[in-house]
Amino acid sequence: MVEVAAERGKQVSSRISEEGAGWACVQPGTFAQLRPDKQGFTWLNVRTLWLSRNEILAGLFGDPSGEVRARWVESQEARGIDPEFRIKPSVGSHFSFLLLGDTGEGDASQYAVVPGMLKLGQDTSFAIIASDVIYPTGSGNEYGAKFFRPYQDYDAPIYAIPGNHDWYDGLGGFMRVFCDAPPLKPKPDRGLRGLLWRKPETIDETGLAEARKLRGRPSQQAAQPGPYWTIESDSLLVVGVDTGIRNVIDQKQTAWLRRVSLDPRRKILVTGKPIYTANAYKPSPLEGGGTIDDIVRDPAHRYVAAIGGDVHNYQRYPVKVGDRVIQYVVSGGGGAFMHATHTIGRVDVSGVHEDAFKCYPLRGDSLSFYSQLYAKRLRMKWLCLTPSEALCIMSEHIRNEPVRSPTGPVKITRRMRWAARLLGGWPWPFRLPVDKVFHRFLSELSDWDTPPFFKQFLHATVTPEELTLRCFAATGCLAQELEPPLEDEVRISLA
Image (cartoon, rainbow, N blue to C red; front, side, top):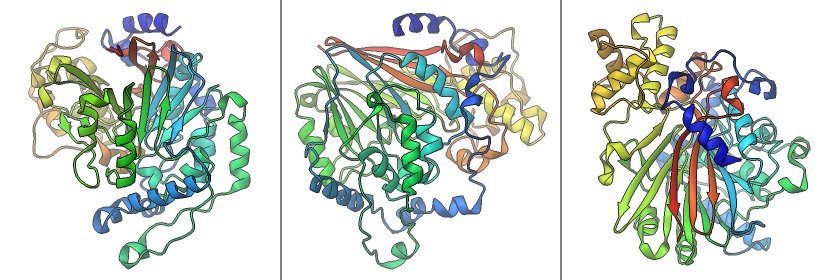
């Protein structure tokens, strides 16, 4: 099925036409019928900001994630879990799986991903959520609307690695849902951090039990050993790591990662923080020295790809390491509000050429999206750039050929250049928020329930000889809901 869908999806993607990007959306998809209600949380609420304070406290007074993670692991080991944190699904030599990142806002853009995911995931063996399962604070009481309900019809296990937002609850909700772990016993923390730190929320066990029924079929059951793990198959290991709040790997997890990386099989790393993003190299530090990418690059460890969430778009960097190429992927477009790609300059990091770099949404579509959003909300019509205008102005800045042809002749004007500067598409000391600041504080001011959403998910096909990664789009448009556009495809040898 996926081969046919991929061939069809190539012909209707944003790389071919504006219609493929969702700009000509006539009717929104059926996803709205899946939502429990129309109102999600808002970052503009003082209570929401206060509940999310652990990120700031971790930066000011130190991140306790490593210590707390070690306690969770010790608790799991006392319960008799596999000390190597292995998951062994019943898959043969040929199988497939899905990967979604940063899913859990419970809003329209999360539910817009579901129909296409279900269609292309019919024959997959499992799915993985990479980072931020539940916004804003990882509460175990929010899994009903933001996890169990949207994925109730996905008829296979779902595994996950936590993101920083899941850690705002001390990982209590995550461990209860994915590992069936009892709460940790409280441990006093001294000083200001201990005084101000948000403690784990008490979970409504009755409510959670009702939510679990939504994914109660035997085929859907998944028991993972902890916040990090390996999923084993004959020809490939999927290695999931937990980067905590501040993107540091603790000593015990580091020792485990070094051990499992010695396995002779090919490997994919799945992490809560991408190693490459926005033309920058940001590997997670390891306690004791070095970085996670030192492990990935070691030829003895045989990693072929590293996939990270946290950033709400899609990017792929094929990095040459010695005589091989490792695919470094950002895949965080599974639900949360889109982060801009038009702020990514001409790519040259680690020898990756601009023409080899792939992203979704395209830079021009990203710029047009934010220009229309701000033009509407600020009542400044001059900021608005059509998709063709944005495509051409980004091509001029990046110095490449437009990925798709404009719908007609475009003359770049001074107004367009100023709009691009204010929106971060061209170099300028000041720009309007289009990334994480926008997501946290301003996204609620926009009409973000209207397609196109520029969401995406990955479909991975595994054979003994080859791994194929495909990025499918979720625009939110009815015409593309069950026949999603294919935005990128890469084939990786496992021989």
